[in-house]
Image (cartoon, rainbow, N blue to C red; front, side, top):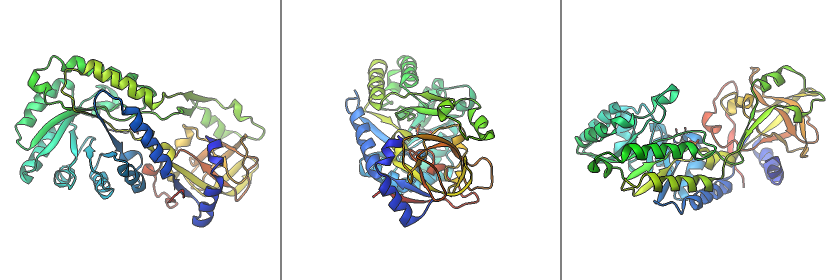
Length: 405
Ligand SMILES: Cc1ncc(COP(=O)(O)O)c(C=O)c1O
């Protein structure tokens, strides 16, 4: 990852020189390449697949617009994201997420491009039926199915045992057209969790009466495809330990980091396709939807910052604060920090800390470079997913966004 960045060093340095730091750099070409690969991966699926980009993973308009231009739909989860999707020119939209308000449902009903609404509960069904009746507008809907009845995921969707009653209730409103079901499972390093859900759906759906099954023309299997090359994290307590100690003469090879690999998207597509074919033959499926977020956008944004102060041989302060990513992410996740000014593919220990007035303003504990000095330009790659969306104006302003030319 660090090596890939160095090839584009001049471009990053020019942008930082022209626009100042800190700065997010959006790489549209890379996003389009990901999109193309995703389409290819799902091209041989047994049922036509439509991809809907999960806007929440990076809600910058550059990202949605670029994906819409490639024929991708948008998956939104709020009225705010609906406005963004319409502004981005989306031709197909789906609306997911719990707690949809009356005004969000009204806006969706009357939108120029009306979303398919995956309803999260009977309350939402009642709310939407009222809005659709009032507007005398037909709306395509479906139900999100709960896939984990315990813990924090129990807040999502309805129990599959309530599906028949849900469909009957939806049919009472002449303006609601029930067309499918939705589920979403997160953080999948491979397709095992999703295929297990598809298998259990097949077992529950196949005994249902024919008229009920005939209603399910779409199945949305959600997002949660982890990008290659996998996930690198600090081992339990390791980041806290490194925060407490000086790092002079410490060898980063001794840091305890855990790596979890992820399978390529082609393998996800193959296994999901096999599962749909094997277990959902009882449904008259016209389309399968997918909602990739991080798989599409994670590599498409980098963050550039400058060293503003070198306070100790093993501690520097940068001009970006973690408000640029919205949370203390680097106390759990590991990303390389690349010194663009003194390039070298050698990892050196150093406390890399931001300029916010809080100790939890941590970028990392090492950098790739020959040395590190005041004024050096640093780059953190792969900040496209859940970084820009979580930014916040805390003490310092949010950095600008520019395109990599
Ligand atoms: C309903 C839904 N779909 C898709 C996604 C995208 O997930 P990911 O970015 O892991 O692909 C999310 C993320 O939270 C989600 O809640």
